[in-house]
Amino acid sequence: MERKEKLMKTNWKTWMKAALVRAIRTFAESALAYIGTGAVVLGDVNWLAALSAGGFGFICAVLLALAGLPEAE
Image (cartoon, rainbow, N blue to C red; front, side, top):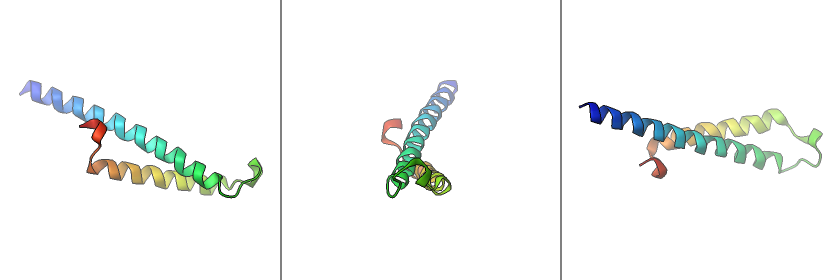
């Protein structure tokens, strides 16, 4: 029984690490896509909207990770 609990804890850590890496990458990609659409100079960026788009991407990535992560199997 102890081995099974240890394996479950290891799988949880692996899943959490993979989900977090994927969510951070999605955050960056979403924010970058929003920034790149209309900004010519740094002052033209609507940072609140860019962070909002990134945050939404982060949440979506975590929710999709609940369905399964192939790298954490």
